[in-house]
Amino acid sequence: MNALPTLDMPRQRLVAAYLEEARSELRRYLRNPGFLLPIILFPNVFYLMFGVLLNHGNGEAGRFMLASYSTFGVMAPGLFGFGVSLALERGSGLLVFKRALPMPPGAYLLGKMLMAMCVAAVVGALLLAVALGVADAGLTLAQAGRLLLVDTLGVLPFCALGLLIGTLLKGQGAPGLLNMVYLPMAFLSGLWFPLTMMPKLLQQLAPIWPSYHLNAQALSAVGFDTGAHWPHALVLLAFTIGCLLLAAHRLRRHG
Image (cartoon, rainbow, N blue to C red; front, top):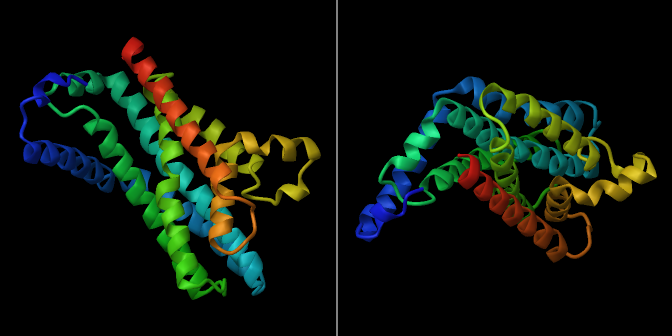
C-alpha cells in the first residue's frame, strides 16, 4: 500500500479509515451467506453428530471434541476469508486498484483479519452454546471464556497462511488448493481422531502443523493437560510472522 497519503492525515481520520475498511469487509461477507454459512455451520453440525448424538453423554469426550472442532472451525475463516478473496481480488485487478487509493497502509489486511476474528468468535460461541446446552460438557465459565479467546486469536495463523496461499495463484484456483491444505491438515493434526489412533509416523509429524498447536491450546482451555503453553504459542507466533513476511515479499514482487 502507498503510505504517503497518510503522513499528514490526522489520527482521528486515520483510525476512521481503518474502521471503515473493516466495516466494509464485514458487510461484504454478511451479504454473501453462501460463503459465510457453511464456515459457521459446518463445525457445529459435526459437533452435534459426534459430540452429542454419538457421544452418549460422555462429558470428557464432549469437552475433547469441543476443543477439536473449535480448532477445525476457526481454521476456515482465516484460510478461505483471506486466501480465496485475495486470489479473486488479484485476478480481477481490485487489489491493484486498492493499492492506488489514499488508504492507510495495512487497512486492507486489518479489515480482513477483523472479519476473520469476528467469524471465528461466532463459530466458537455457537459451539460453546451446543456444548453447554445439550452436550453435557461440564465447562466452567472460566474455561468457556478461555476457549472463546483461544478461538478468536487462533484464527490469525490461518489468516497468514491463507494470505500466503492467495499470493501463489489468482482467480478460481484458490478454493481447490485451500481445501487440499485445510482438510488434510485437520486430519493430520488429530482433530478428527486422537493422534494415538494414528500410525507412529503421523504422530511424530503432527507438530509441524499449526492446527496441532492451536488444538493443544484449545484442549488446555477446556481442562486437558497438554504441557507447557508457551511452546505452542511461540510456534503459532513464529508461523504467523513467517507466513506474513513471505506473503508480503510475494505481493511486492508479483502484485
